[in-house]
Every structure is written in C-alpha cells, then in structure tokens.
Length: 246
Ligand SMILES: Cc1cc2nc3c(=O)[nH]c(=O)nc-3n(C[C@H](O)[C@H](O)[C@H](O)COP(=O)(O)OP(=O)(O)OC[C@H]3O[C@@H](n4cnc5c(N)ncnc54)[C@H](O)[C@@H]3O)c2cc1C
Image (cartoon, rainbow, N blue to C red):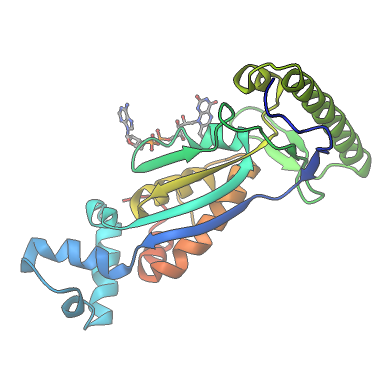
C-alpha cells in the first residue's frame, strides 16, 4: 500500500495563476557594466551608474541595434503556480531558461484544478492565424464550469482509487488532466524573459505581435510586472523598441 491519506481530499477550483519572484540578481547596471567592457574595459558598478542619461541612451542603443548579450548578465527565479497545460507551453522556451517542477512520482498530486474565470473570453472566432476571442454567455460559462468540475472530480476520484489500491503514483497520475495545477521554479535572464514576453503576451507596443493562450499570458504579465521593477531602463527600452528581444 502507498501512504495515501487522500480520502477527505476535496477538489478545489481556481481561475487565477500565481507568480512569486523568489530570488534575483538583476539591475540595469548589470547591462551597462557588461556593455562597457567593449569600450572602457573593466569598470566598477558604481562608476557606470554616475550618468543616468548616458545609461538610458546606451541601454536603448543596445536594444534598438539588437546587441543582446549584455542583457544576459542577470538572473531572476520565479515560483509559478499554474495548470499543467501552461507549463507544457512554457517549457518550449529552451534558451536561457532553467526549470524544476514538482514531481508526480515522488509526491501525491493535490486536487487543485483550473476553471476559467468570468473575464476569460470563451469563444473563438475566425480562422487559424486570425482568431479573435469574444465573451462567452453566462450559459457557456456555466456549462464550462460544470463540465470541467465534473470531469476533474471523476479523474481525481479514479486517481485516489488507484492510490488506495496500492498503485504507484507514477502510474495512477495518468488519469489526471492538464487542467491540474502544478508548481515550478523557472530561472531566466532579461534577454530570455524578453523573448518569452514577446511571444507570450499581447501588447499595443509590440511590433511583432503574437497570439498566446490567455493562461500563459496571465503568467507572463505577472512576471513582466516583477521584472519592470528590477530593470526599469531595460524595460522602457524593450517597450520603446517594439517589445522584440535583442
Ligand atoms: C502563439 C504560439 C503558438 C504556438 N503553437 C505551437 C504549436 O501549435 N505547436 C508547437 O509545437 N509549438 C507551438 N508553439 C511553440 C513555438 O513553436 C516555440 O517552441 C516556443 O514559442 C518557444 O520559442 P523559441 O523556440 O523561439 O524559444 P527558445 O527555445 O527559448 O529559443 C530561443 C531562440 O533560440 C534559437 N534557437 C533555439 N533552439 C534552436 C534550434 N534548435 N535551432 C535553431 N535556433 C534555435 C531561436 O532563434 C529561438 O527563437 C507556439 C508558440 C506560440 C507563441
């Protein structure tokens, strides 16, 4: 038998995602310091922040002319809670990212499932590459919530049944859906984050628009808000130059 004690575990349903910046070493001065080795050789971090206008200009020049590597000398680690289908999309971002996700082999997965909130546009119109999403009716929201919750409850009951019968977690988890919440640490740098944000958020300043699924965009928006506070000059230059990663 496993150590399963899940009999009282009731599924819960969420329509939000969470992002916590757990660790960082990221500042605009890191970009300047890395860039100025090209022209000035080794410099102290204090030295390079003395002239704010010049700093702003240099960061903008690097962004505009796509000198990307100075934006890599920094690090941000996020703890993210989101449905598995978001992580499937997220982990396609291979370059400049490190991931560690909770294990469905080593721990019993908790019954927390995604149900779209009222503000999530439910109906897709148009053709591939030219979709727009429009509001769902109250009835469509009700149908969606009811169908998802029923399906999640059934799936989790089957998972528990197998655990209680002594089946290994890694086998029993097969029945759990991609709407199940998972958690992971994701570490990136400003350059890899900008590439992610260009592809996974929609923004009026974007000159190369993308059409991401709303749920990964929700994660992206929360990460963007944290990053903007850490590197305001870099963030401003990203927006000014069409939100394309250098
Ligand atoms: C709106 C949207 C819809 C999508 N739909 C689908 C889909 O239907 N099916 C699907 O499978 N995926 C889909 N994707 C995922 C997409 O194809 C990318 O895998 C994902 O966006 C990661 O982008 P990336 O490869 O540029 O990022 P990263 O893996 O982080 O790579 C960053 C950059 O490094 C370079 N690079 C990385 N690896 C290589 C390599 N092997 N060879 C050459 N250059 C490399 C490229 O310049 C790349 O842009 C979708 C993505 C978006 C945003």
